[in-house]
Amino acid sequence: MKKLALTLLISSFIITASTAQQPQSSEILKLKKWSIGLHLGWIAGGPSKQIEEHMIQNGFNNRSGGGWFGGSGKDHPYTYKYIPSLMMSVKYYLRSPFSIGIVGGISKLGSTHGYKIDTWGHYLQVDYSVYFVSPVFSYNSYDIVKIGIGPAVYFTKTWESGDHIEGPDCEYKQTKVGFLIDFGLRIPKKTRCFFELNVQYRYVGNIEIGPFNEDPYRDELPQTTIRYNHVLISQGFGVRF
Image (cartoon, rainbow, N blue to C red; front, side, top):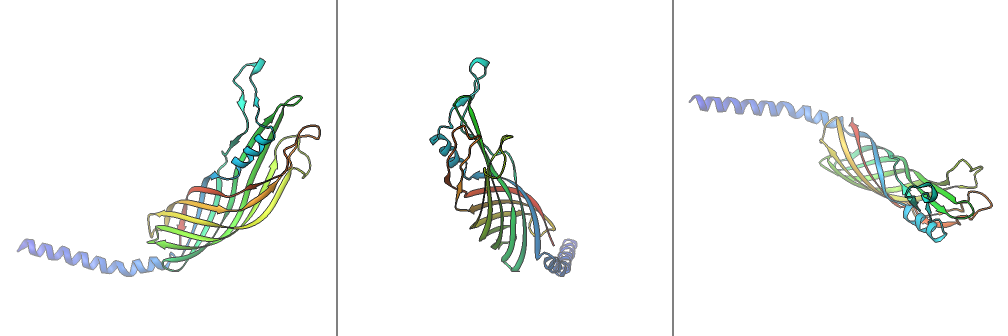
């Protein structure tokens, strides 16, 4: 009898507590129509492979260093992708499970280095980056998994780096309209703060770059067309409100 009474008491407490929490949960959900997140990530793919191939075709694929001064030298061309990308996102739930948002940010896509042996040796460094902004329409599963798509405006910049560069002739900017596909995983669900893993495929299209030339007495890297499409893999934190 005591066990039955204890069981009924515990069951009554659980039901009462559950009922009391329902209005509170509904109230919390109403406060979470909006979310904002800040991400840090790195680029996969991008134009670096095509720029390296273009350097090879034009002779900027020699080995530097070593020789009389020792050391093993370095093969060219090669690319650095060491600078992280920044992205900010704002999302609003239209009606669960659908949402609309704005994402934007800046990505340093890479820095490609070439070397060509002429009278003294000719180094060439080409850097490239992109700013973007995009409205994104998303489907969200339990406020954890999201997949979205939207048009995007990309502001690309490709330039030759070095102390010798003067004037705007070795800097090329273009504005392109493309799209992006956005996939994200947020944990935990329905909390004020969250952690998010994010993958974006960004379609930018073809960009004309070049020519690049360190000085008028050396061989140049002629104009070419490259694809700026790339993938961003990022992680970040956000707030629901």
